[in-house]
Image: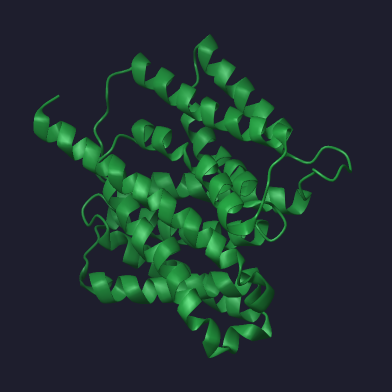
Length: 297
């Protein structure tokens, strides 16, 4: 690998790590607003303000998309909005680290779709064991709310669509695609969020915190993710994203005082290891792929 290629990879990796830290910090900050505006309300504020910032920076109306990119772009935008909405609904009742781990099942399933060898199914078993430890078992105090858990899994399914469609939609325009995708998401989920928001959403006092959430959770990290997503192979991207559940758990502990039980930590670790393992196994079994496929390929 040439030195320029190595530098590009490390640059993309650094951007992705910064994006993950920003997203989890923003999620913790957003959760502090739930008692005032509710989860739908903070989703509307995050998407609406984040979209405004992205549009001011990237001016998405100037972009031109080919016919082959229109459908991926629509899927990308709707997946982005649905992922945000269902994830925020989930962390009303589920600790942040557990919600992120359950959400990560989406990208993990995407990676495991190519499972063929015996070792691949070891990672499947490890991921299932992680889910067993994370999901609610019985009525013990350490159980996880089933509705919140299902919403986190729904967010994970949307995340998988976000990855697949984002690579195609962003092939030519890079981070500017995020602005258009966020605009599409806002047209659906901002009105929905305001409809079900608590009355505190109309207070100007929450605007500075809501703006910080929008920057930390949407405008800043999604732009960095799009740069990384269009430069890194999908399997490498998936491996690095496996750190997200651990970062979510640490963010919940540091900022929200959320402590996980030993089985929950074991479940989180199992999902992280399954993701890393399947990604490395698949990478070693086939030649390195190009970072971005051509639209319509």
